[in-house]
Image (cartoon, rainbow, N blue to C red; front, top):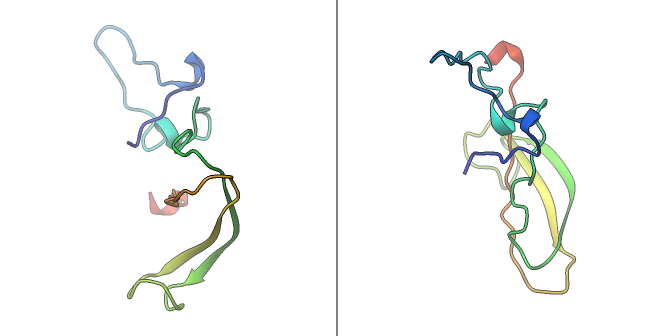
Length: 101
C-alpha cells in the first residue's frame, strides 16, 4: 500500500480545525515528503532472509532487457546474502523535478 506509518507525531500531516482541512502539501504527502521519517521503510520485515542490492544503473530505453518503447530502464543486481532461500521484488519510487509536476 502507498502509505507510511510515521515515526513520530511530527512526521504526519495534521489536519486543520473548525472543519477546514487545507490541502497545501500537494504531492508531498506521506512517503513522498522528504521532511517526514517513516517508522518502517517499505518492505520492512517481509522476508526471512537478507538481500544485498548493488550495481544500480539507469539505462537508455533501447538497452537489452528494457521494455519496448521505454524512455529509461533501471537495472540492479540483487543477491541473497542470508542463510535462507528467498525471493525479492525490487520497487523503484521516482520523483520528477518541479518543472514536470
